[in-house]
Length: 310
Image (cartoon, rainbow, N blue to C red; front, side, top):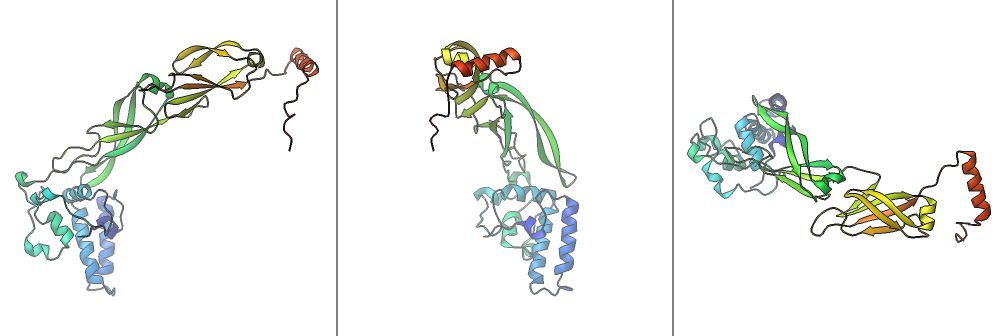
C-alpha cells in the first residue's frame, strides 16, 4: 500500500490553517469536478482531493494522520502499525463499508474502523523534536542552567498555530559540541491520549576568538611579549578552569604549542588544553619606543626572511 501525502494533493504546507485548506480545496474542486472539468483524469483527481480534504479539514483526523505519517513520503510503501486495527478515537461515528467505496485503501486502513469507544482508541506517541542550544565554553567546564524558548505547533479552534514555550534545562558538566541533551516528554504532543515525544537539543559552542575546540581538547591563544618569548620565564594565564602558572621555554616562536594535560573539557578521560603562543609587539607610538626599536635593529642583525628562498 502506498502512502498518500494529503498535503501535497491539496498543494498546501503542513502548517496550513483551516482557511488555507478550505481555499485550496475549493480551487481544486472547481478544476476537477467531473461536471465541468475537461481533464482526462478529473474523476480520479476529484476523489483524491475529496479524501485529502476530509482528513485535513478535521482536526482529529489530521492529528492522527500527522502522527502515523511521520517520516513517510508520497508513494512510499506504507503499512499501519500492527495494533492500529483498534481504530482511532474520533468524535464522529465510524464509516460504513459503503462509505469506504469512495476512498482509497490507504484511507480505509487508517480511518475505516474509527469509533467513538475509548476502549478501542489507538494511542500514538508524539513526534520527537530537535533543536540547537548554543552555550559558552565555560558552561561545559562548570555545568549551567539555561532558559530557552521554543516555538511549538498546537491546534486552536481547528487551526494550527505556533505557541512559544519557555523551559529551563540543566547543561551537564563536560558536554561537548555535537552531543545531544534529551528532555523527556518535551517533544510534540501525542494523539489519542498517547505520550508526548522527546526533545533533543544539539549542543553548539558560541564562537570565541580565544578558543578553538576539537572534541574535548581546547586550544587557547596566549599573547606573550618578545622578551618573554626570547628569554623564557613563568607567566600567569587565565584558562577556562582557572588561573595557571605556565613556564615559557626560552627562544619560543609564535605558534609554539604548550600542552596542559587534563585541562580541556571535563570527561572520562578529560581533554587537554593547548596554549598557542602568539608574540605581541609593543607599539612604537612614543619617541622612547622608537629609539628602542631602532637600537634593536642596529644591535640585533636579524632577518626573519633569510630562509625564504624561491
